[in-house]
Amino acid sequence: MRIDDFYNEVDKSNFYLGLISAVFRENSYVQVENLSLLNHRQLRLEQLIPNTINYFVVIDSVRGLFIGEVYQTKVSSSDSIHESVHSGRKENVFPEIGIDVIGLLNDDKFKLAGFKSVGITDKVYIANKQLITKYIHSLEINEYKNPLRLKNLATIDEFQNKTLDLAPNTLFDRHLMAVGTTNSGKSTSALSILDNMIKSGKKILIIDPTGEYKRTFSNDEINKLTLGDDATLPVGQISLSQWERIFETNENTQGATLGRAIQSLRYQKKEGLTGVLNKNDEKVSTVDSKLASLDVINTSFEIKDLPKQIQAEAVQLNPRGDKYTTNSFNANTNNWLYEKVHYVLQKTKLVDFFDDSSSKNLLTKIDQFVSGDKGLYIDSSTIGTTDGIGSMIIDLISNHIINKKRDEVNPFVMYIDEVHRYTQDAANYTSGLISIAREGRKKGIFLFLTTQNPKDVPDILLGQIGTMIIHRLTHSEELKTIQNLVKQNTLSQIKKLNQGEAILTSINLLNDIHVHFKKSKRIHDNGTPLL
Image 1 (cartoon, rainbow, N blue to C red):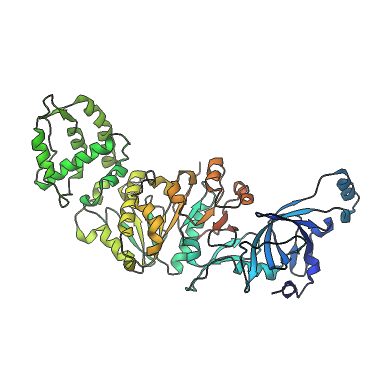
Image 2: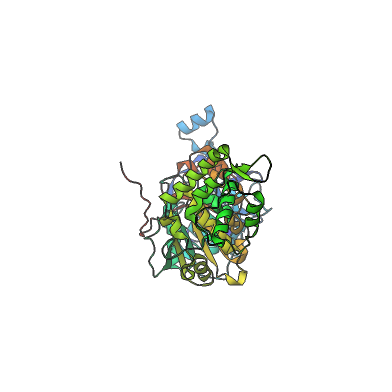
């Protein structure tokens, strides 16, 4: 298509700015013919304000029509320039505009320009409404077979009355993360997307360690489970690494001590014995023989006895090496773990989560969700809101889901709020969340994560994110974490974003978009109390 096809109502000379004067790999520059061309003007329904930045231009090139975004406007500083401006001789002043070339018109749609670029002396015009509309319709790089779109997700700040409509895969293919400081609008954007997904009939798994979304969705829209009430789990289905998450063991000996205590209690359960396994003054061969009798079937134990068993593990070999004896140093060391485990069991309802009832088995209910059509909300706040418990629940569910075969999964989005709280050890390659981030897309499992602190999200997880909603960030280290995900001239604007404003950047979009999410009318129990 030719440029004249888009300027048939108002002559394109009214939109003219100047010629391309410099071309670089990362950007290009326009020599404006005179300062008067940057004056504000109204042309029918077109309002042009070219003396600023963040507006779009079209470049008429021998290779076709390129669209670009203005990121810099300047007038050289000199005595003659100041004198010309002061005396009103704008025709003697030649401003310079920096533009970022976004795409090339191809088959009625703007597409990534690739190795093609604009050329010296190509003419540059302010993009009119017709070209802007075509640009908005070209934002999505990929075309998906499913025509259903998420409508009115947000308003696009650069264009008045323009709303963002996207295919679900544009957002979630290669996973989605929303970042931003407290009260920046992160929760607003997340709930707006969740609301749109539910209304569109898309399947979502919401794991809520804090209970914020308990009243957000109705039972007709989504199935709801409350851990410890209508969803439980046999104690033996929790792995040792997950127990370590629950009790937040240190990197020294606490993990090993916890493992030995659990093994001892498993023997007690297997033999139908109550209380702890006493090792003091017992032969080493006898104790080893007892524990060796355990197999993969003997995984259950009495969790209420765990603190006392940790104390009972404070033993060492006697001088002859044939018996265990109490060791005061180990007792003092184990006391830290004892206090931690005792506190968690006393101050939470974690014990309520463990039940052998097959009708309430959480993993069975997860299986029904994975193969079904309706969304699922899991409230784990009732068994404790500690990061350790939340991390265990997320890892447990993630590991179970990722081991499903592809034909067993009806595609869905897995939503986790404030994910940095539950990924302390996600650098461990066995983490279920990491496995979903790396392999989930092949099975139709897509992540939707939010965080206040992107620098606290492990690099291995952050590297799998293809789409990001960036609200206001102020800390230099946080900005450094995401600097490779946005254009350099966009990074400086992140500190200035108002509440609700965000930059949407994605490998599935032609360009970064400045958006404003509207607050959903749904209930969300995350408000900050007033002093």
